[in-house]
Amino acid sequence: MNAARPLARLEQIVDASAVAPRIDAMLPVGARPRQLQVRTLLLGMLFTAVDGRPAHLKRVHEALLGLPEAERRRLGVIAEWNGGPHPLTYRQVERSFALVAGALAKEHPDGTPSKALSEVLDALMEASAEASGQPGSSSLAVDWTDLEAWSRPPPRKGGECADGEASWGHRRGDAPGATDEAFFGYYLQAATTVKDEHGPQVPELVRRILLTSCHVDPPPAFVPVLQRMVADGHKIGDVLADSGYAYRVAEHWALPVRRLGASLIQDLHPGDRGPNGTHMGAICANGSLYCPATPTALLELSPLARGATDAQTAARDQLTAELARYKLSPITGRDRDGYHRVACPASQGKLRCPLRPASMTLPPNRPEVLTPPQHRPTCCSQRTLTVPPQINAKTAQKHDYPSPQHRRSYARRSAAERAYATVKDPATNDLSRGWCRLTGLSGTALFAATVFVARKLRIADAFAARQAENQRRAARGLAPKRRQRRRQTADDLTAAANAPP
Image (cartoon, rainbow, N blue to C red; front, side, top):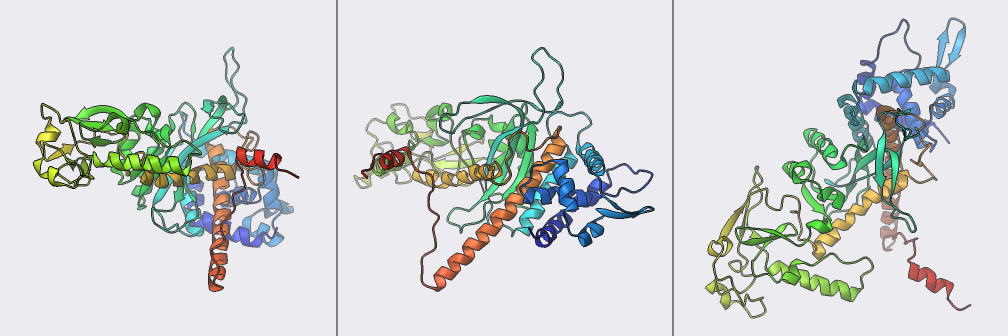
């Protein structure tokens, strides 16, 4: 591999992040200057990740020694000592990394990164995003995954282990034949850029990461990461998350994310679906308010099952469209305190109701309330209602659940799964146990950041190549080239196996 071009890109990222001088100021000053500077150490770690090597300090040492001689002298890998040229030793790499990891660690570890480490990770991820081309999207898909520690867990009889910051966690086995299991290590979270609704395609770059011990609840721990993004001037539009985030207490996830100006698009936990209380007589269901006369069967609609046929999809979409007729229509957006106003669906011309005489003149193709409440609740006696932020705090989101608009928008969340799939690919950087033979949160998080930077460069280059190819095809009057689906379903494999010769 030609090291000149990758090294230049990596130097641009490190310099743009300005983390090297920040870390240098935190390190102790010795009797003589260190041969291995923080900037060179970070370049060696990044170069190791770009090459697809494991996150071992020995590999970092080999990567630095493998640079051209001119670059080694420029970066201080070869220094002039009294006895002549002195190449960098592994012991110097080990010592410098230990100083950096110690400076970024908390004095009293609690399973979360220190403020200094968080700022370094944010700066590296943002600088690499700018070097890869700032994505033209404000939508993010968030998710967490497991990251096993190199250390063995503590003995059952009690005692300490090599990695005191790691802890027991739980991971799901979604692969065929896999089961849920416990693991010892960390939770790794990432926010991946996805295209905006009705927007152009963008490279799926990971904008922020977070590494915490498994005893720390992931969703609340990730809220400060999003808050720092907004404080740095980055707008957050849609935030796509699975039910693991939506199921949390609203004060720990949904409410603080909405206060950042973001719109939540989430899959609801089965326990949060369907009718869940009332507000001024209106039924709270799936994050919205509905007329008290809404049929129960419509309120209990569930998302489409995987592998649903076109006929099943069309039938379900028709039912969700009918359910939308009973929804209290928002007539204002949420104010700074989270309040908004909604109106009766009959007064908005969405259905016919005897309690709203004007609505009975609507066409008969509108749903009609046949048995209105005998005692008018507030939602039927007033034209509009004020909804405080505590109502549907966990479940309120951008699109009605489970409407086709929500289904199409939520489908963008698969970018988060692809992000983890590419950093756990044995062909590139496999973040399985043994990938990083270090202990402690700060050192592991630094190496994890280098892997996502390397992935970001690969994804950005591949996206640029596809865009250039599509432009060439368009110039020749050809349609854009579409990626073929490689994975086949069980039915496809069975049909191929039983096909006649």
